Length: 385
View 1 (spheres, one colour):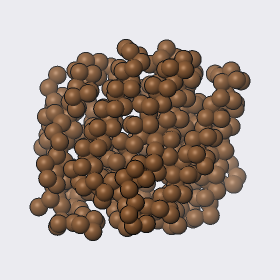
View 2 (cartoon, one colour):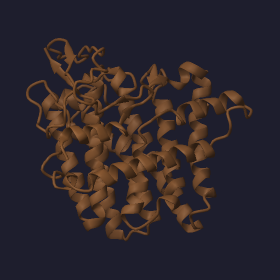
View 3 (cartoon, one colour):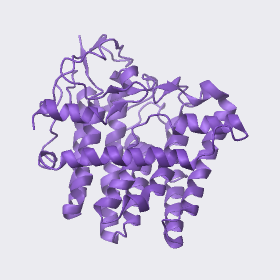
View 4 (cartoon, helix red, strand yellow):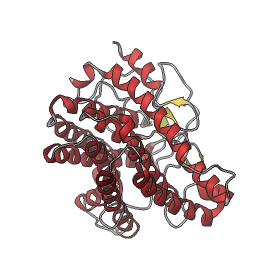
């Protein structure tokens, strides 16, 4: 299959939230040409401009100040993407549809009192997101012999936690963002008070969804609630966010400290997602360890790419505000433009290596890692003048 055909297939799935613009546009599709950027880095050498969309020619490490469209992947994943990717992408479309339908079922109707609260919850949770984390739950479950139907409530609980974290992250005392998932941030529509309560309600509903799931036995429900609470709390997302609010602004922060923060703030929920799917499938201790390592490295990879998008990305393509991290340390600041991208590639390769520890069962996880990397990288179609 040629690169153009693969680009068109991916466009059916990896789209820009709220805009229906493909992250992988067909060649000569200039739908993103209106995006114009300014590099918000203190070290900016000048303005940046959007690259013309192009086919997927195979990944090349970006030259000075340049990132190209993602392609067949780095050496660690090239073999995986040479077969089976059609089936995986088709399955991901199906799974995301299942998640979206189930999420709507699990929320109160928007007219149920208190209406502002429930409308805020639906506004944030049912917005057109990419659903990376719930998809990881379902792919991990199926890869290890489980079923998507049995893991669906766990996947939805993970997405509720993720969405709650986004609502809080967008508040003025955090990132003060205006847009999320291609639409106004929750607090811009409903106010900071209702947005905060909506986030708390989504977190609690996530636990309730797991506790009430008819697909899971009681001991497994307890395991998953324990897993999620641990990954959310002061050893996970909350800890990473606290470090981000306090230490990311301090001079002299090291790459190691930044990675620890990212593994908590971003990587913890990736781990929770993959481990939840694996536990639903009845994974062995050895399989669980491989899955955790896979997800932790993929989550860190995702954060490095997110830093690149924030510094060099387009608001339209990202579906959210960019330039939010201009006043704190990021991987782009500490490693440089090309160094950060190289680190993301290396982390993706490590994640794939851990997925392969699962044997044939790990192939779909490894392919998913490559698709996520491709989708994120495709947003970085920028070039210094």
